[in-house]
Image (cartoon, rainbow, N blue to C red):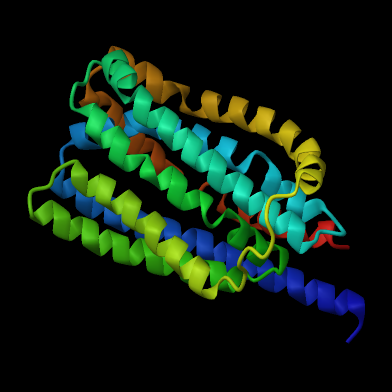
Length: 277
C-alpha cells in the first residue's frame, strides 16, 4: 500500500470515528438532558448556566493553545508533553483557587445567594480536566479517535445514569453538578488507564517557551470567542430570572446537537493529519 493510500485510509477512519464520537455523545447527552429536564425545573438549569462561562473561559486558559502547539510541532519530544502537562495542571489549580475565592462576588453579581457552594464544587472540574489534556492530545496526534470515542461515550453514559439516580433522590440542581463532575472524573480515569501516556520529565522552561510562543496567539482569540459565545448567559442571568436562563441554555444545547458535527469532525482530524505531513 502506498503512502498516499495509507494516509487516505487513516484520514477516512479518523473522520468516521470522530463523527461517530461527536454525534453519539451529543445524542446520548441530548437524551440524558431530556430525562433530567422532565425531573428538574428550568431554574436548576439556569443556575448551572450562570457558571458555564467561567468553566469555558477556564478551559481555554488552562489549555492556553498548548494543545494546538503540540499537534503542529514536528519534532515534539517527551519533555514537550511533560511540560504541557504540568503547565495545564498548575494553571487548572490556580484557576480553581481564583473561582473559589471569587464565588461570593459571582453570587452577588447574579443575585443568587446559594450559588457560592455550587461554584466551589462544580469548578473542581477545571482541575480534573487539566489532568488529561495531554493524554487527549496524544490520542489525537496518533489519530486514535476510536479510543477517544469509547472513553467519552462510557463517561457520559455512566454519569448520566448517576445524575438520574441523584435526581430521583431529590438532589435537585446538585444532580447537574454531580453529572458534570462524574463525567469529567470518569473520562479522566479512563484517559489515565488507557491513554497510554504518563509524564516522564519535569517542567522545562525551554520547551514551554517554544510551545507558548505558538499557543499564546490562540489563547487570546480563544478567550475572545468564548466570551462572545457565552455573553448571553451572563446578560440573561444578570437581568432575568434563572428560569429564563434555563430555557435559553437548554434550547441552545438542543439546537447544537447536530449543527456543525460533520465539519467539526473533519477539522478535528485534518489538523493533526496535516501537521504531521
